[in-house]
Length: 140
Image 1 (cartoon, one colour):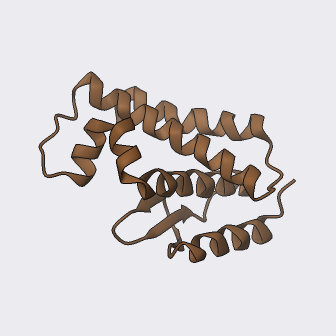
Image 2 (cartoon, rainbow, N blue to C red; image 1 turned 90 degrees about the vertical axis):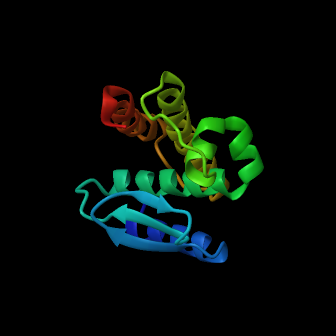
Image 3 (spheres, helix red, strand yellow; image 1 turned 135 degrees about the horizontal axis):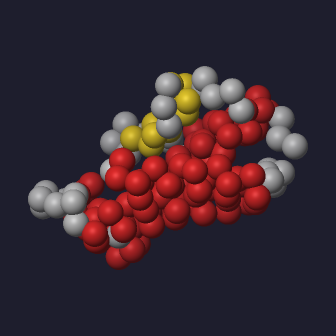
């Protein structure tokens, strides 16, 4: 079982070593240009809050290697880092969004293992699947 504040402090320290700021908010996001991970501190389930932080760090980890990110998600790379126009209604764009979201969850899980966090993998991916589902239901 994760100790909430201890785990958040550990993740904050991890991010600070990378030059990334961890901020409380009413939503979850990673802002590459601002070097900030925002997490929804109003979630009732503290375990899910930690899972969300891990997921957003997963986005940071994916973006940290732009070449690898561009190879894995070429359409999203063009949208996020290039100057090209991208049609967000294409199946290719939507597919890459879902794949990128899963990739961030997977990276978050690997980081948890690396940091010896005792996460419940089944609960982690159950929560992740509910979040990823919103992207393939057309919320993109």
